[in-house]
Length: 186
Image 1: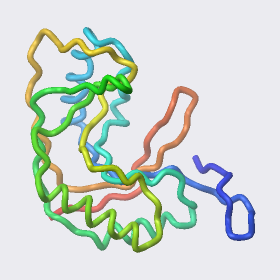
Image 2 (image 1 turned 90 degrees about the horizontal axis):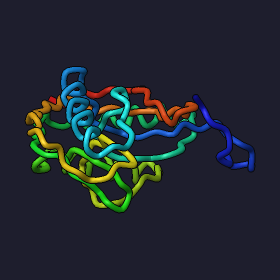
Image 3 (image 1 turned 45 degrees about the vertical axis):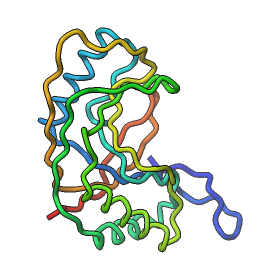
Image 4 (image 1 turned 30 degrees about the vertical axis):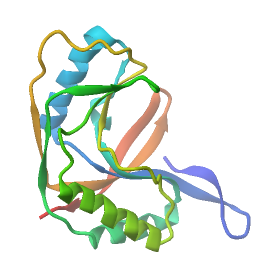
């Protein structure tokens, strides 16, 4: 759902969309992450991420003028990149914001390169984005305490063959994510 409020050149409010680029799991991989989340929830409590919201962020842009969404899609179409695999063997926890997460055992160079190319293209095109050191992760639980599961978790191997542009729509119970563009990785 579009939002209104960002100031345009003449001081007029313009329609915006809250967007980010991400890696988006298919249903089978999403189900494996949901199994992790449910097992963690048994001991850690907190709120489980909705299955349709599971992702790894590549670049978070926040509110962007809706009129520039096609520009973002063209930018992404020019990026290219190679397919790769991510392997997950154990969850983690950030005490400062009480988030239980899954991160790949290592970040392949091809993923780091994709993020760098994306950020460079966004800067050249004049888009603002969250400029933190890149740490790929997938949020499993929010408002959790850390108490690792008693049962071992099944390793997850995720074959990445595309990246997506996602719009975050506000709903009564939080946010719901909608994929608005997909680009293959060869």
